[in-house]
Length: 108
Image (tube, rainbow, N blue to C red; front, top):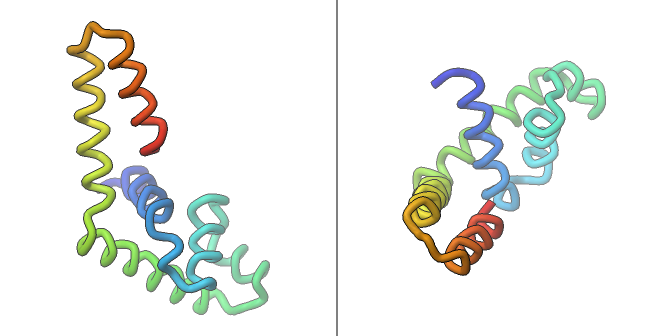
């Protein structure tokens, strides 16, 4: 998996599972994923060592992977979105397409 795909995946996992992380992990992952801060920048902002940031980041990412391996919410979300896209492609009914679009909006 390339870096961009990995970043997108972790952003999606973070959106789904962030409330299951510790406050520190949640804050550091947010800085890293949402704000694209470097480990050094996060360490300076939080007044902790770079290695502490790296450790929290590593543990947080591992937790996100563990949650997904157990719950499969991202996989299920992606399957639903793939199916809604197919429904919109084959349906000629505007009301159905509108309902499916609303489902997609809620899921995203």
